[in-house]
Image 1 (cartoon, helix red, strand yellow):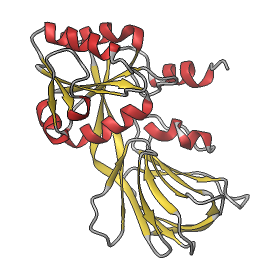
Image 2 (cartoon, rainbow, N blue to C red):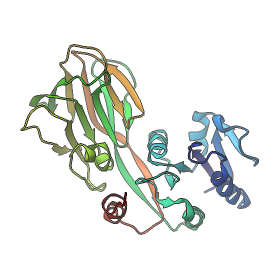
Image 3 (spheres, rainbow, N blue to C red):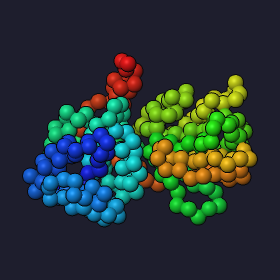
Image 4 (cartoon, rainbow, N blue to C red):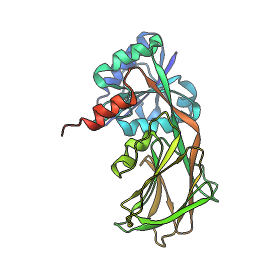
Length: 283
């Protein structure tokens, strides 16, 4: 492991103090540190600043400094190249991060010693049927929502060719197991173990008493037909990338060909993390 990349949320580490410390550890070991050009000149170390494409081609692992949002963005970048990521939580909940800020140096030492495992997390891809645009990737979820005011939208849902129903709601969340504890959970959807390959379909504030979440196989292909006749409907991935859709469009969502590779240096299980971070929460 010679080449290590860094992706840092500057809002969480504004002076890049934490990044500087870990990057210094890596350089002291004779390894190379890479960062994207947007960080150029921000660290007083011998850093290789490269384009996004060169970044992915150069690194063996990526250390992600930030919260869950930063890790989601890094995962979509790293997964197609099968590059593992080590998440350092500089945010609040930090559900996806392996370690907290105070243990970051210990975690990095474990990585150098080979004392870690890699979890493969299923990802989703979404595209508009009949269009040549590149599919969007999501580690958490694909959401179809109305971005204008609070107007209900009408969506027809099919799973692997079988018509389920047509629903009126504020939108639809199509979630991976990793994303089941995010927006999906807040909307009343089920929690899925990240070891499974399942997809949850959860309506957002459905206008019907019978509308309940569905859990389908990861091998299923979900088709969502947009039946509302006004503008402002969007299909978003992880709440970070989106594309506008209109009446008559069909959004197709299925398991992606790539997986997110998450480095784990702690022995905490999925259920340990769930209990610590999402059950015993003191406000």
